[in-house]
Structures are given as structure tokens and as C-alpha cells.
Amino acid sequence: MLGYIFRRLFRGLITLIIAVSITFLILRLMPGDPTTIMLDPRMNEAARQRLLKEFGLTKPLFTQYLLYFKQLLKGDLGYSFIYKTPVSEVILSRLPWTLLLMGLTQIVTMFIGIPLGVFAGYRKGSAWDQLINAFTIFGISVFIPWLGITLLYFFGYRIPIFPIGGAYTPGLNGTELYLNVIKHLVLPVLTLTLIYLANYVLYMRASMVDVLSEDYIRTARAKGANENKVLWKHAVKNALIPTVTMAGLLIGRMVSGAVLTETIFSYPGVGRMIYEAVGQQDYPILQGAFLILALSVIIMNIITDLLYAFLDPRVKLD
Figure (cartoon, one colour):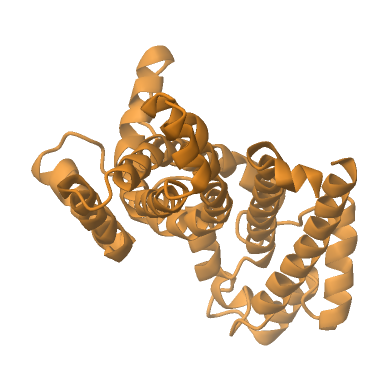
């Protein structure tokens, strides 16, 4: 297992280097440069060149690439063009809000989606199964901005139960502040949950249908084992294996959903920061944000692989 962990860490490091390199090149291929937004239209070309030189954008692309990696090895993510502060400070001020949103969404989708998938697979072909399938098809088909705006309209404007934007109301303290933060999270979490819940339900249902037809399930039932024990101890544990894989990959998909959701709800997380940085061509912010997001996806995939060893003893033996 120790050798397996080291191999996975090495592959994760290679993946991270490739992701950082691709991000660096793609950002440089964007039309224009940061000075287009930062400069006053009345400024001349000399002033523009001075700014480009200050940000190191006049150097050859390969030189910029080497300097960027040299900074990364020192733990320096660069200096934001727009905020005029270190990128690490900007990201650290936004990251907790995104982690709260994504973590809560992941917990809610797992605790609802997995039991629903188990129930649908166990009741395959029943009216309940068809109803759950119809709900999951809606979740897969719906567009995040449409769903977010619809929820805002009904529950933020027509029936003003929840706030329409932000992460909290300024001026609050203690318990009142925590409750206010939760209130602001309801609509963004509901939006992401309705979208990504279908993944857990469909994967778990399909796995349960396959597992329940296996010989060892029939053997357990033939030995007189309790049906709940057969379902939860034998069937669910084995059916969780492909669902765990999907959960790790879903983190990456949720990142794109967080960009849209945080923008719609004016939520001060990394997703909204990425949206703002793209419009202002703030390369250091975008590079730092994508580095953190790529790292989080790689770490989740490594954790997913390690969970395999717990769920499937054959992986540990291999």
C-alpha cells in the first residue's frame, strides 16, 4: 500500500505540472492584455509598455514560464494586477467561502443521493423507481443559471424568504451571524444539489441493480440472512465502488458549477473571483485559482483511489 500511495502521489505531481503549464499557455493566448483594462484611454503607448515591463509581460513566453515555476517553487503565486496585493492573500480570503459551499453541497448530495439510489435500485421497475428516474433526468437536463435565477425570483423576490446575494449581512455577530451565513447558503446549495444529485442517484442505482443480481447476494439470502443485512452489508458496500469514483470526479465538475452559481448569487468565493479575473485578464489570479482547483481535484482522486482499498480488498491485494 505504501508503494501504491507513492506511485499515486508521483502521478498526481505530474498531472499538476501539466495542468499548471496548460493554464499558463491558455491565459497567454487570450486576446489583449491586462493593460487594456487598467490604462486610462488617454495614456500613451509608453505608459502601456512601462506597465507591461513592470508585470514582466514583455519578456519571451518561455522566460515568463520559467520565472513562474521558479516563483511556485518558493510558494509565491505572484502579485495581482487588479487588486495590487499578493495572489495568495486574495485566494485565501475567498477560499473558505467556496470550501463551505462545496463541502456542504457534497455532504447534502451524498446523504440524499446514495440512499435514493439504493432505494431505486432495490425497487427496480416500481413506481418509486420511475419517479426517482424522472427527477434525476430533470437534474441532468437543467441549466445552472436558469435554475439559480428561478430560485432567486421565487424565494428571493416573489416570496422573500432568503437573501438574494452575498455570504452574510454585515453588522451581525455570534450565533446571529452563523444563522445568517446558513440562510445565505440555502439557495446556492439548493441549486448545486438539484444539479449534481442526479449523478449519485443514477450511479448508485445502476450499481445496485448489478450487485443485487450477483451470486453471493443469492447465497446470502439462501442462508437466511436478514434482508437489511443483505442490502446494506453485502450489496451497498460493493455498489459504492463506482460511486466513489464518480464522487472524486464530481469535485472537478462542481468547480465549473461554482463559478456560475457564485456569480449568480454574488457569493464571494473563488468561483466568482475567477469570473471577475477573466474579465479583467488578471493572469496571476487566474493561475493561482486554477492551481488550487487542480490541486484539490488531484487530492480528491488520490483519496478516492485509497478508499478503493477499503471498499474492495482485491485492490489492496494487487
